[in-house]
Every structure is written in structure tokens, then in C-alpha cells.
Image (cartoon, rainbow, N blue to C red; front, side, top):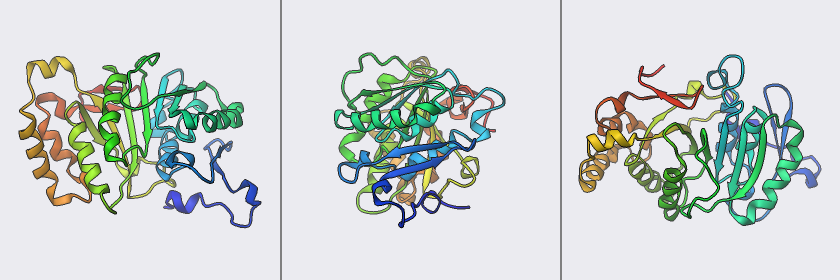
Length: 290
């Protein structure tokens, strides 16, 4: 199976003026064209995790039978950058808001304009800075995020925004590339330590990713806010004990925190440990894993 890196390399002999447009073919044969900037921050290019998540949204396992699971659903993408994931969702019938910082709004609007003929739902770009007060952003059915785990100082603002945006029925789908250089393993470990304080989460097996656009070091996680009534009936243990237990579980696999996801589920009391995300409707059921 080809990795996204192998599948999406541009022909080096093409017109250099077009070399900054990333082309992503959909299953129906239509093509998304994504403008990239040659210079700027991390949001100016299409990262592999965005491609993997975009193609996952097209898989039969996610889309369901008949009308696509995203059709007429409200979707918000965090850290959109070029808007690849949000635009894919909009072509599948979702009503999408792609969000990022002010300096990326022109790029987002350019890519919306370039692909508006493919949109079957709706899509608009808005400014959203992680950690800031949420205004004019009702809780969506889905929150999508690709490669948003990279700066340690952004973790707490990101998690605050996830908590503020998430309703009881919101399904968060997070895709990220696991990196082993520098501080990346510690940053990922801290992210999951903080995440599990307020959210339940589950890794989607690689065999459920798109059969071509997948890579062993790119992971897709389903996340759902813990039920407040369950937390009130079963208070969480003291924070220092929870982090100590979680750190012990992950210490043997710092380069791969996801290998301990099932162990971390043990920290979730009672029935919540058996909650399964249902990609077809963005809700949760308690019938176990598929």
C-alpha cells in the first residue's frame, strides 16, 4: 500500500509556477486543487496527515450506506491551514467552517474559491485563535483537526478550545503524524495525558483508513467529551495520581503513546471504558467496538 508521501509527489518537470498547488483526487474522479505558499508558517502547506484524514472521510466505513454521514452535518475544522480537510468535508455535503489565524484567511479563501464548484454543502473561513473566548461558534456535529499537535505551548489552548466547542454529541476526529525527533514524543505524551482528563478517545485501526492514502506513523483518533453527569457521580482521582498512573503506563512506549490507549481506557471509570464512537452519526454507542 502506498503512503501519502509516495502517492502525492508532484512531477518535478511540471511548470514551476504550478508546483505549489497540491492536487488531491477524490473517489468520484473530481480533483481538489489546494494552493500552497512557498514561504511562511506551518499552515501554508498541505501536510500528509491532512491528506490521510481527507481520504478517510471518503472511505465506505466512515461514509456509511446511502447518504454520506457528513451530509447536512455541521463541521468545524481547527488549524485548517490550506483548508484541505474542511474542503473535502464540504464536497461530501457538510456545512463547514474552516478556521485558523488571521494571516491564513487569504489562503483559505483562495482555496475555497478554487474548489467552490465541487462543494455540495457549504464552506466559509473564520478566524479562531486557540484558547481565546469562543463567540459565534455553536457546537458542531464534527470537529476535524489534522497535525495540530506540534507546539508544547499550544496544547492547553487547543484543549480549552476543544472543550469550549464540544457539545455532548460532538465527534472530534484528530489525525496526526507521529514524530520521534526532538521533543515531539514528550509533546505527544503530554497531549494525551491532558486530553484524557476531559475526553474519552479511541484509535481507528490502520485497516479502516483509506487503502492507498495511509501510513503507519499517521494516526486517526476519535475523541468525545466525557459526560458531565458521569463525572459528577464518579469524581476523578486527584490530578497528581492520575498523571502518575498514566505516566507509568506510557513510560515503556514514549515513542508510541498510542500503543497504550487501551491501557489508558482503564482510567475511565465504569461504562465509559466501553464507549465506541459511531462514525456514521457522530454519536456514541455502548455496544463495544465494531
